[in-house]
Length: 83
Image (cartoon, rainbow, N blue to C red; front, side, top):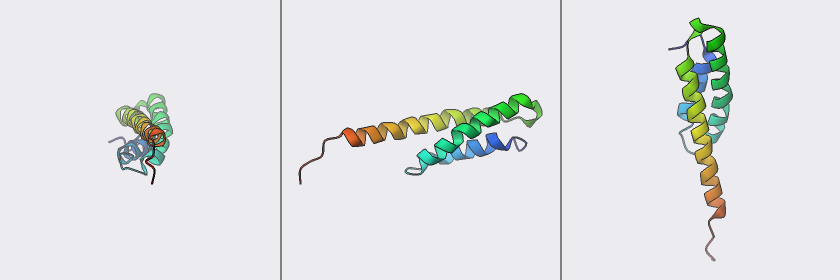
């Protein structure tokens, strides 16, 4: 557990919780920069660890954002039935 690299750890948890529908996009938006900052911190201070957590935050955050954008585009492009 990279308790010395709080950016990677917080980004990881935000990315995992971004799998929750509706609030996921907001959490994923926060997970991406935290993952990048965590990766930078792990490179700057190798004793902080957290590279894996940071990469998970970056990758999962990106995937969740792409999924939310795809769903949004599909919802907007679907023809509506007349009432």
